[in-house]
Figure 1 (cartoon, one colour):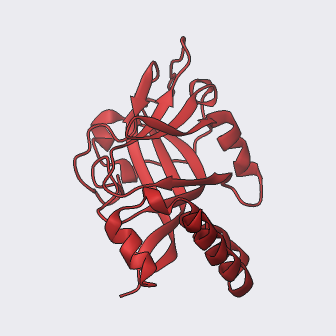
Figure 2: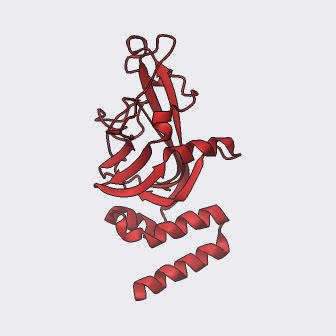
Figure 3: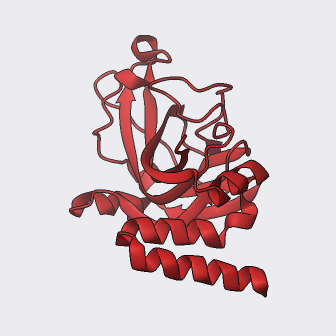
Length: 211
């Protein structure tokens, strides 16, 4: 009970002293503080944690059918391809997700190779992707399960990103960014292209240290 009361007092203080968005994020971190590492909790208690705007991008080649993980094949952070450290966030880097965007492009395998940052991710999403589901997991637990059609529709809004309830992605924790396709999903190509690529952009705040 005392721990809950202390959290509520902290939230009330932040509400009175901070900008609305920063207040929302810090309040969320207070509520989920027990999920953070001991070191992050210590730094927060010392006032050394400051939420900082952050985008995390993952690009990968995809094949329609079944369930695929956009982080498969990665074992390190690779500029232009994967901002995760393989399939984990870097140690002591926690991320509060508040919105996301999913983009699609095609290319010729022999030309693109593994240089996914060369792909033009402005193509319209094909039916196979529009009917698919995006699943965000950590430690095999589902964090978010979202319709890709709904994510795509957000591009027609002023924000351009699909807004979701705040979600915590913990540091140094196995993460899955999965696309679950429908039973008869398939990609078709024109103009000589023979491969499909997906770009997933996660937007939110990282728990940056202030020292």
